[in-house]
Length: 253
Image 1 (cartoon, one colour):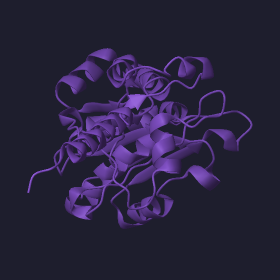
Image 2 (tube, helix red, strand yellow):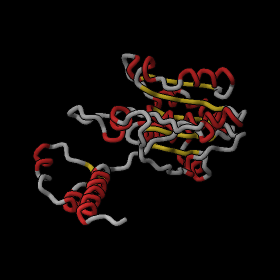
Image 3 (cartoon, one colour):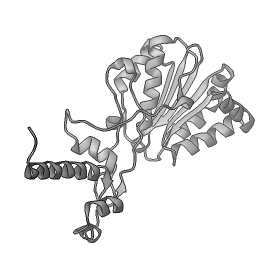
């Protein structure tokens, strides 16, 4: 049985509304009231051409496929006026349990695990613990080579992510050493790069044994500072050689 013209028009309107709503959900709306008012009266096509697509957000994965679920470490960021960040705000505040979230997996071949018998030094701060934890889970499953974790955050009482798991790995031998530093727990702030500099001699010993270095976390503060410490402790020729042979790997953002 065919549709009447009126039914067809209603169906077309419903499809157009759904398409517009879906398209708007992928666009960035202005927060300024004046800019938002300027959008009123625009045609759907002009509206979509005016609004910018939502920027992608990238998060290191803290779990393995065999875990049966995707685990992330997300810090809720805020704009100066208090509004939550787009990606972190949506995931931590607005999306409901059971709702769908559009995502895609982006492979990072330069951050793949080393050989199972190769010592590993893991350095990171903040949410960078996610990528490091995934490597330690691989180690726990199929390696007896030593691993050393250096991790920095703000306060131990609320920012020591996966503390129970890390302590268990240290006790079982998956981790041979853990150096955790919390910048706000002492009068003079200290960060992961400071701990690394203090352990420069031990760092050189591990590298002589063939250790691979993995760095995960902030690209604007931690990663350059750690790189500077590595240059000073190991020398530029050695660090460059390690990078060329996959013994110095980074996942920074």
